[in-house]
Length: 231
Image 1 (cartoon, helix red, strand yellow):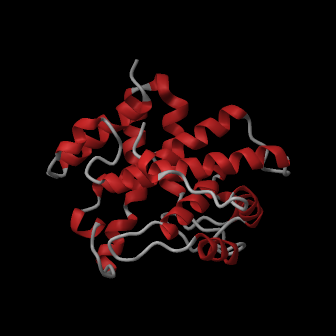
Image 2 (image 1 turned 180 degrees about the vertical axis):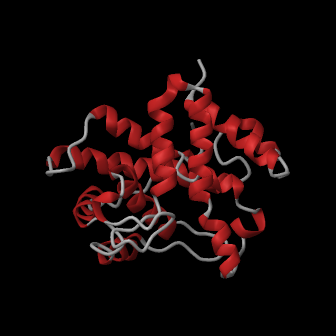
Image 3 (image 1 turned 30 degrees about the horizontal axis):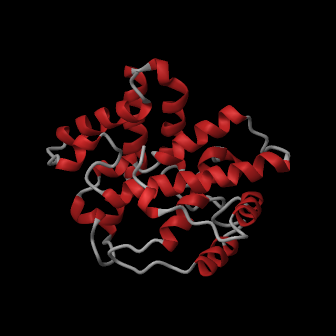
């Protein structure tokens, strides 16, 4: 049975070939983010943080934040594949060790719309996986929106941002902070938590920051990075 992951991989590869982008050996592995192991691992870790957040959220019964088990499962799928659009970001931008130029940052920001385009194209080709692919489409497109409207690509604010994307934004930011990158070392858990909490009401949904803090409080939650990349 064909999975949403396999269908997304197929369309991501088609997109990359259309750009004339080289296809490396990692592409044969049928995992997502086919030229960058760490981006695949980031997607996995982000989805695990989202999974823990959702367990807390579903016990709190906050007005406007009640979700079903099925919705929670779809949110996790969206989180796992939120950065699929980075297949369309030039490698020299994606892996640049220094600060991005304005043009390079513009290229990086397009991963949101590229990701939603890939998920949308996959959806049109595989309606039987509609719910999962629609979740990926929404999360890929909106996970860089910010509570105060300062995000991209649409500049949405507050509850106009889809709930799934607001949740993934927190998990995505946290993992980006604590994980080492070519341009920075990883941040300690405590400092990352402080930075997330400081962004409540500006960058992030304040109610979800409370959920995030409760979910990752004790003990510090950190998915096994060696397990990351697994389907």
